[in-house]
Amino acid sequence: MQKQYGTWIQGLILSLAIAFTFGCASTDTGRTGAQVKAIKGISSTGDDSGAGGSGLIPRADLAGEQIPLTELEEYKSAGLCQRIHFDYDKAEIKPEWVDCLNNVAAFFADKPQYILIIEGHCDKRGTNEYNIILGENRAKITAEFLIERGMSGQRIVTRSWGEERPLAQGDSEEAWAQNRRAEFFYVEQ
Image 1 (cartoon, rainbow, N blue to C red):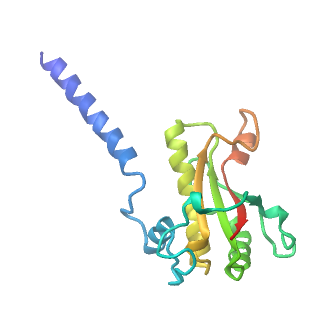
Image 2: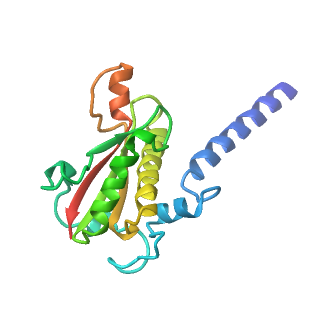
């Protein structure tokens, strides 16, 4: 009887731990001020003008089809990149992408006619739920980086596709590395 009771308690504790982990994935606990601002879509520069009020622009308010940054006439001359990549199971900006992101921030900072869309992606390892959260974290940490460099959070939309839209097919580290990314698109207001 005690063995059954102990197994039941262990199952309950495991269930609560899983529920807590997924239930708290989008809270602001332990985040820096800039991270909270990026997640809520509030500019760290205090510039919350644009779509009215604070917060990111809801996806339903976006007019037109999203366009890859490569379609911008100034794409190459502005030093923009279409995407950045992440290490396995990480949502940290790698040093090799800092210049590219600085260029994106500078370019969009003085182009109020554009809304930047950042899509977070993962490789296919891990559960769908975990990968959606990881993709969201990748998009939001990228948004935070841009906001810290002067871009208004009012003009950034983040979304996660998890593992659903791979860039490369296959079961190799090379393919997985290509799929761990944040990708940039824009729409005109």
